[in-house]
Length: 360
Image 1 (cartoon, rainbow, N blue to C red):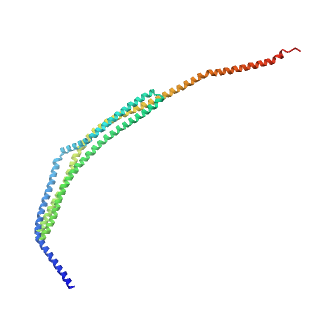
Image 2: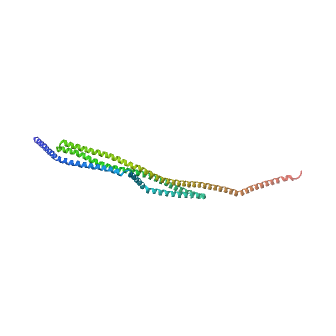
Image 3: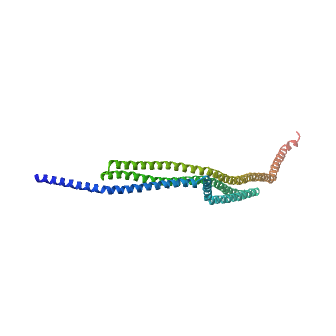
């Protein structure tokens, strides 16, 4: 029991010696650490100054590179690029529209030709002509629908150009904001390092037994410097955000003008297509009406011819049946006359003896 107690006391004493030695070493090392931290604080201060300089330069760049003239040029380029990116598609749509229009016109002309052939149609050929007309009408309608579809596609390109222009404007603003945030982030990081190093310096100065007045004065000075830098960073950040928003406005206003001008150009092109579409649709409607009228007249003509044929057949049948009927009637009359004469003769033969008998 006594031995265990002695061992415990010995360990505690040894631990105290080690701690005292560590404290002594820390005290000896503290001045060196303090000097090293002072150098780090100077380095962090230089980094903050450099970051603030980058923010200042970026502000100057925004002012120099995005005045009214340059913003108008940027707006023109944004809208021109948006239009150029759709030009190949627009040309394909116009070509496809023209091809569909030509097909619709060709089918319309063929339908008119079939309508003309209906004037000479017979019962045997009318059904075939009507089938041809139906096929041509279906094909013509399909091409007209294609024309309408291509017009809708051209209109869609105009909306896509507007969307692309707005997207590029947002990208410009986003890029400027990203650059500003990067500079601000770097400056804030330098200020945070400055604050941390200032706290560490105070601790090391205490360990080095620097006078309280000195290390408190140093801490206050470093803290004020860090707060000053922090305030400047926040103010510059607000200024940058305002500048970037103003740049967006300076680009957006002429961009709206460019977009309206281009929209008017696109709209005139669409109106031309719509005018052509209405002309082809009207031609198709006239061809359909022509076919409908020709079919009606053909049916009436064939029905009239059929009626005349039936009447002629009945008359011919009546004429061919009249002589036999007359013969039958004559035979019947002759037979009746023979019968009457024969009966009259028999009567005279019976009455003659009475008339010429002997006298009483």
